[in-house]
Image (tube, rainbow, N blue to C red; front, top):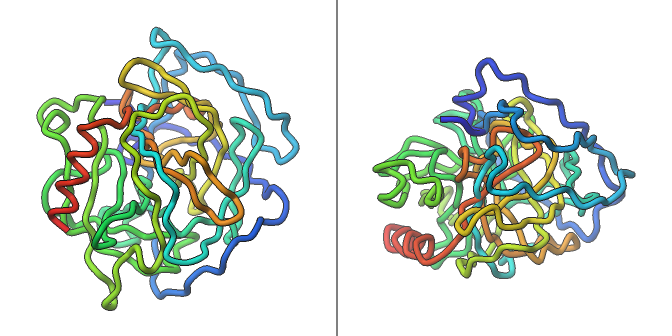
Amino acid sequence: MSGRSGSRLSGIKARVVTGIALGAMLGGGAFVTASGAARASDSRPQAAQDQAQPTATASASASASAAPVPSAAASSAKPTSKAAAKATTAKSVSAPPRTSTGQSVTLAASQQPSQVGALFAGSIADGHHCTASVVDSSAGDIIVTAAHCLSSGTSTHTFVPGYRDGTAPYGVWQISQVLEDDAWTSSQDPDHDVAFAVVEPLNGQSLESVVGSYQLDTSGVTDTQVQITGYPSATDEPISCTGSSGSFSSSQLTVYCTGYAGGTSGSGWIEDYDPTDGSGTLVGVIGGYQTGGNTEDVSYAARFGDGVQALFNQAEAAG
């Protein structure tokens, strides 16, 4: 199976994304200091050049030209899940800047969103393989990612919010249970490439109370501007991009954003993003078609609907 998970990165050259900070960060809050270190392994392949897309270089001065949205007949990329609602933050958080449309940049430490982190198979020494985001829940203990990043049931994986250069500024959080749709676990249906995971408390605190969260929207958002932050497995620093999402099919979304190589699977698509406080609405995750896409610059997501809401409800009950 092709895609962008770290397990599939062997033998695939990761493109170096030129990270350029886009000016001073607007209104970002201070990070909460926490002990720990982390390294995430990537979960998104970048082969298949069957889809012709313009080559884009990450640059703060790049012109904001809208990238073409591939048709359903074009070669595959990653499907995305959808979730709409204003991001809930337990505290002021650092926030990525908006970028020229479709152009990713490497984030400075002061621009990293605390609600986004890297997934590890165990210890942070094992390397990160996917990206996940915290979503608002009653117990404050739920993250969302792509189903192909985890396995349903109990888990030994860990989540490191704000991971950077081998450090875990908010601690290393143990995942206790993973919830996936039966359509995914039985046949890897790309329309159900979404997973919710429950994390255990750390030092007597819930994950959401420490790093904040995004609110989930399962109304099926399609054409909208989104902010996507993820961790390519070839680096230990996250990238972020402002892109214009659209429908790839009735059940899949697509977006053009440069440099989203293996490891960025599971990265959240944030609608109504406010760079002054990091708030926004999570409406999808990189995954789905071709487990997120076979090229670095075009990503996909399964469209969020009733099935994703039902899955979230199960995670709430399990938390």
